[in-house]
Amino acid sequence: MRKKLLKAFNLSTDQPQSESSQEGSSSSLASRNPFPLEILEEIFLKLPANDVVRLCRLVCREWKEVVDSQSLWKERCRREECHPRDASRSPKDWMMFYFCCVMKRNLLKNPRGEEKMNNWVILENGGNEWKLEDVLVPHPNETVKKNFVTSYSMCMKTQLIDLKKEGYGASFMDKFQPDIRVTDWYAPRWDCGSQYKIQVELLNQRKRPIQGFSPEMVYFEQWNDGTWNQMRHVFRNYGPGVRFIRFTHGGKDTQFWAGWYGIRVTDSCVELCPANEG
Image (cartoon, rainbow, N blue to C red; front, side, top):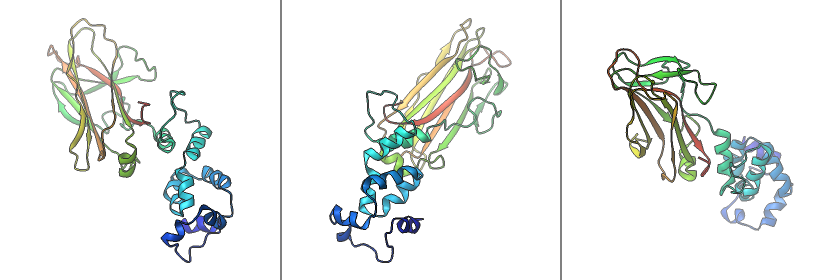
C-alpha cells in the first residue's frame, strides 16, 4: 500500500531518504511533490482516515505535517458532520475529536437483554436467579422493551471490555485519553424494597485497576414510585495504561420474596467520547 501511494505521487522508493534530506527546506520537499499542499490535503480527505494516519503520515516529513495539521481534521469533521456538542468550544485536537466521534458506540454487548443472558458473566445468581422480563414501567427511551431482573438474594453480572479488540489501541488510549462515559438504568418494583449496586473499573494490561467508580449501594423502600433512574459517571484524566474496562452491576430485593421482586437493570452503556463531551 505504501509503495502504491508513493508511486501515485511520483515519489521513488528506490533510495531511502537520509535524515538530513528529510529535514531539508519545505521548498525542496515541495519540488518532489507534484501537488500543492491544498491538493495534497484534498486527496487525504478522500482517503480512509485510518490509511491517512497509518500510511500517508509515514511517507515523508511534508506528508506528516499535512496529516498532523488541525485544518485537515477540522475540515474532515465539517464534511462528515462531526460537530462539538458545545459549538462555542472548539476541540483542542481535531484528529482525536474526529476518531472519537466516528468510533463512538456502546461497548457493552446485549445491554437490554434482547439476546437473553449472552455476553454477560454471572458472578452471583442468588434466590431464583437472574431473569428477563418486559419492562413494568415505560422506559424514558421508548425503544427499551426488556430488562434484567434480580431475585431475593444477591444477583451480580459483569462484562470485560477489551479496548484493543474494539479498535482503541494502546497508543490511541495513552495519547488521547478520551472521556469514558458510563450510564446505567435501574428501577425497583413499586411494591417491594430493593437495592442496586454498580462498579466500573479501568484496568491495565494485567487487568489490575487504574481507576474505579463504585458508589454506595442504592436502597428503595417498599411502596415506591417504581420509576427508572439513571446512574452516570465520566472517567477523565485517568493517565496512560488503560487497556480494559470491567462493568459490573446488580442487586436484590430486601424482603426475601420468592420470585423476581428485586432491582431491574437495562440499557447499560460504556462509550468513549471526545474530551469534555462526556
